[in-house]
Length: 195
Image (cartoon, rainbow, N blue to C red; front, side):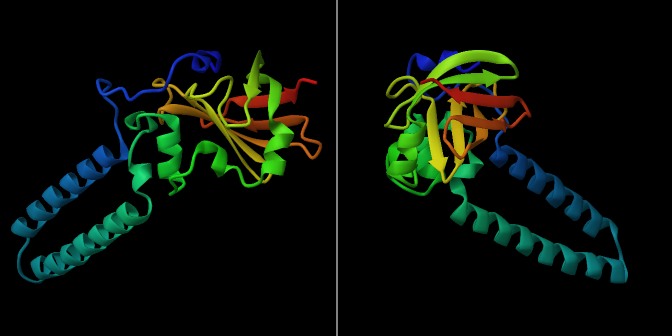
């Protein structure tokens, strides 16, 4: 699964039909507004007044929530495939214009995981290399790693993944020789540093 990302840059796939959070939000709002309109026009007297007040408050709350999310979490409304490369996606997610290497909290920590690893996904083994630049296998390969404390994320762009990338979330051991975790579909991830 991860070997495919060693080759080529990760570029946006504009032709793929993908359900993004924006599509889901638009469908939800359209359905609720249609339901509200139908209910208000078919109710009478006090029920109609109560429905009008409720739907005005409801529309205000949904609008506020949407714009709040839009202001503070814009990047999460799009699939990673809608970005031109991994660095651009990570910069948007982490609200920064820094390179992927700058997302690492400490250069000392990053040095502990840089190198070759035996990477195992649900028992399938392969060898990967975590580069100092935070790319995996080779610079601008599309796949990146991020270390925050002892939490290691390995991001493997793939149009078949539900969010446009396989994201391995792992915990690095105290001696920095192994990591263990899962990806977003529950696949077991294990890594062992190669001396």
